[in-house]
Structure formats: structure tokens, C-alpha cells
Length: 435
Image 1: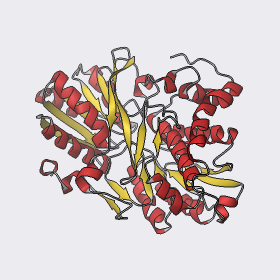
Image 2: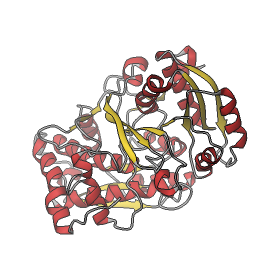
Image 3: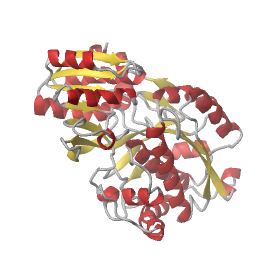
Image 4: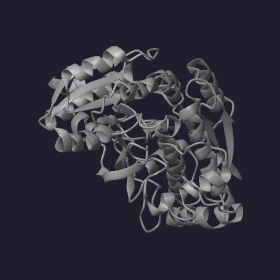
């Protein structure tokens, strides 16, 4: 894929300015003049703790880069409510103990006004108690299993119900009702498999079998044999990490050509770029973002893709989580300007009012159209896509629509402004078929 060159002057002065100017004009000063220390300072501080080395570097490094892109754009266009952004950025090296140490440092020594941190759910759960004890505004940007209802955590990546909720019904309609599930053997994979069962029930489909694969496993011959014996209409794959990537190469070698739906492949680790064709043939990914998403704000001239690769010309791919880091920084900007202060309780109140991107005042996020932060649940009503890879690993969009986060809001009754809590709800709490 060729990426047209954009000069840095164009990149900061035109494309970035379009987004920044729209946001800056929507609510600056609406909260009035504040005399608190944070608001009267000339700068504010954002913490960015993302994996740039270790097991999650492949998916974490683009997150760090996209955060810095957003910060550079915002600073180049006047900052947030006139304040320049300083950063506390460190590499946690994919180590949860180091994440805990750096989180404490960010909060207690660096006094960050907001924190972006962590790829895996295990990391999120390792630092969330620290976040909650310190009442720290925290953005978690990875697509994840869903269910976190926490007064200080804004889980702004898409949930399993959103990702699987667009791709599974499509595959049932296109190929038939019989499903075989393979998933990583830890919290994310197990809960995602539960969501497959819930969605299968809602779409008159059947789960013929499910397997949970240890993260250390890289040999899938037996799994492929069991899939072939079960003869499903399609497979749902929630495999994770470098070892599990070998499944796609091995299924191609074995001649397994059954369609595969996924919430993890391609959008995060860009397997369609890294693996030889046809390993990813007939893969259907339910995502809120990939580099190939065909929106004007993403792939248009001077769009998100142009600006990212102008700043990072050697970066290999612009992944799903990177876009979420990027747009959530702009959501934070809009909330601070609406609140008229960087004081975290007031900014949280502003976020809970329902921050939107894609309105007349705020141009759309790269994933497309209007996306809204649901204040009650601290999740985002995402624009979701089904992206399909063909035999040559070309990727096309086959369906797209906005999908709100409904599990927390409609089923679990999460309403943080009215009932502050720090809970993670799971499908087995509410659905018999998930047990």
C-alpha cells in the first residue's frame, strides 16, 4: 500500500488544524474562569504508559505513537484551553509489575491530569486498584472483553459485544448457523467465547465446540483436525499473541478454508501484512478501526494515515488501538475545555455529559461518522466495520454501522453518574447460555 507524502507544515497546519480547530471552538470557556491551581497553570500533564518493548510491543508501540501525534497536533494548534500539554511517557516493557510502579509514579510524583496505559486486560486489572485508590482519570483504549463499570476508568475501545456483534450475525447470514470457537485461554478469550454463545443464541446459531488455547501454544494440528471433523459453517477466533499467529499459517497449509470471524486478528497485529498469503484468506474481522478503513478522515488526502506516517515514516502499521488513543485524546481536550479546568472530578463530569466527535463542532474520528462517549458507562458507541482479507491479503470493508455499548447500559444497569462503582460484569451474570 503506497502512502502519499505530506509535508510536516501541511500535516500540522492543515489536516491537524481541521480537527483541533473544530474541537477548540466547541466549548472553550463554557465552564467559566476557574482559580484552581491546575487550571491557572500554563501547562497540563498527560501520562502515556504503553508497551514499546516486550511481548506486546507490536501492538503497544502504535498506541504510544498515536498519543504523541495527537498531543503534537493539539500543542501546535494552541493546546488545550490555551495550555500546552506536557507528557510523562515511559515504556512499561510489557511487564505488569513495572506498570504498577510507573502508574504510582505518574500519579504520586508526576501528578498527571489524565493517564493512558496498557494493552492487555491483565495490565488493566493490575493497575485499576491503584487508579481507583487515587481517584485518577484513566483511559483504557484496547478492544476488550467488556463489562468494566468503574467511576475513574474510561474503557473507550470497542467491547466484545460490539466487535463480535457485527461480525457473527453477518457470518451466520452468509454461511450458516454452525460455529466452532477457538480462543486464548485467559480472561479475555474465555469471556469472548461466552459472548459468542450469547450472540449465537440471539441469532439462532449453534456453537458446535469450543477450545481454549494456552498463550504458549504454537502447534495447532490437533485443533485444525477437530475443526475439520466438526465441519462448522465458520470459525470464531479470539486467538492472541505471537504464538497463536501460527494458527493462520497452519490452517492454510492444512487446506482449512472455512470462513473465520475474529475480534483480534489483522486490526491489532496486522497479520495480513506480516504473514505470507494466503494465511489470512477469508478472515472477517469485526473492528472499529484498521489502517484500511475507507473514510475520508482516515485515508483521504491529509487524513489520519497521512499524518501518522509523516510523523513516523518507518512505522509498520497503524492499528486499531492507535486510533483509539488518538481520538480519546481529543475527547479529553473537549472535556477539559467544556469543564474550564483540568481538575479531574470536573473533567469526569464533562466526559459523562456525553462527548461526541463527528458533530458540526468536532470533525469525525478516523473510524467514521459520529462517535459518542456514553457518560453512564464510560464506553463509546463505536462505528464498527467488518473487514475481509482475500487470497492475496487485500482488505475490503464488507459492512459498517454504528453499534452502541448495550451490555452495561441495558443489561447490567451501569450508571456511573448516579451510582459510582468499580465493578466488572460478565456475561455469566446475566445469560444462561454463557454458563
